[in-house]
Amino acid sequence: MQLHLPWPPTVNSYYGGGMHGRRYVTHKGKAFCESVVDICEQRNVQQIRHSVAVIAHMHPPDRRTRDCDNYWKALLDSMTAGRVWDDDSRVRLQIGEMLDPVRGGLVVVTVIDHDGDAAQGLRAMLAGIAESECDEWEA
Image (cartoon, rainbow, N blue to C red; front, side, top):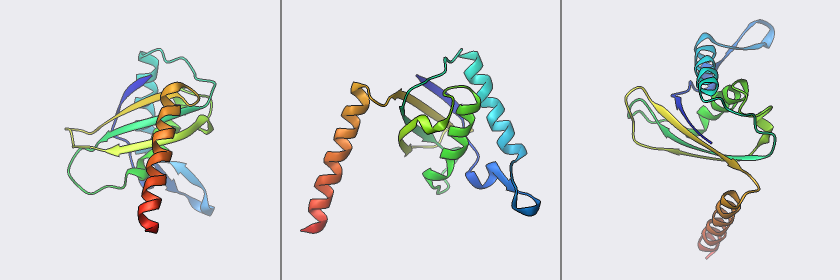
């Protein structure tokens, strides 16, 4: 499954801090979540009930420096609200890549079966890269 989603808020602007240490989803976070839910409904997304790998190609709205990891919480929580899966604990592997900006920002999210051939090949490739990089650092 592939979804083209709007640019998400960072985790810092998705959640706000309330009184007594309570956290809440901000207006910006709710608006993003509603957009994702609408996209999932338009696509008639069928809820996944197995482990998945998620690949996010992130096109920010401008050239500012950004931390790729600051966007995952909003993405995954909103995809849960959009009934892509019943709980984001189904996500066993996440890969995000920050790419060139596009007007308004865009995230192309690909969801694949964690136990399928594509994800197994991906995990094997990542393990091979990690092993070769460790060998180079130890030398």
